[in-house]
Amino acid sequence: MEPFSTVIRTASHQQHVAAETSSFMGDLLGGRLGVAAYARYTEQLWFVYEALESAAGRLAADPVAGPFVRPELLRLPELERDLAHLRGPRWREEASALPATEAYAERVRECAERWPGGYVAHHYTRYLGDLSGGQIIRDRAERTWGFARKGDGVRFYVFEDIPNPAAFKRDYRQRLDGVDADELERQCIVAECKRAFALNTAVFQALGEEFARSAQGLSDSP
Image 1 (cartoon, one colour):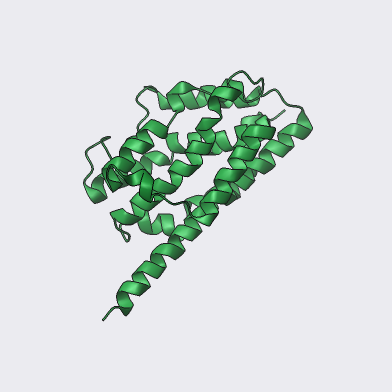
Image 2 (cartoon, one colour):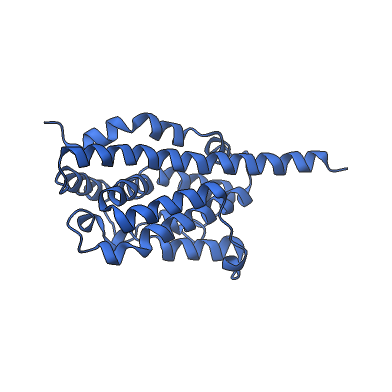
């Protein structure tokens, strides 16, 4: 039987590629957007991770979600440090979630409250992405906007308590392979992974539209 981690990766590949190749992310990583776009994206991440991590303590003992709740993965403190660097000490007062971000965070909260398997799907799509493709974002941000290597502004992508990311990801996939779920539940988890990527892509699309409007407004200025 094919390992469940392989089933998830294969089944959600198309949605994963759509998220990675969004026009907003392409423009951001290609240096065609400024640091304000990076800051706005980081701000949206905060809302999603607040939804994910506010439930972590409660789910730590859950037989399905519990094995994935790992303190070395938690990102909120680093996100908040990055936002203080990017937006200043009053960033919380000015932070706002896009409607697409609100929908994403609400779905995460819904799964955390009612469906541990769905929480696992969102946990997987976010944290393994941070450990993998997220490192490309960190590298580009450091080189494009002059952040100190692994310093303030990119700390979200720095997992100081995971010295060997490759080994950690192998262990995580083994936990997925052994998830406490029957075949029907596993199919539902796969479907939720696809939904998670789609929600993430919707945030990218909304960010792209926001910064396209900003650029248009500048071009229309006298």
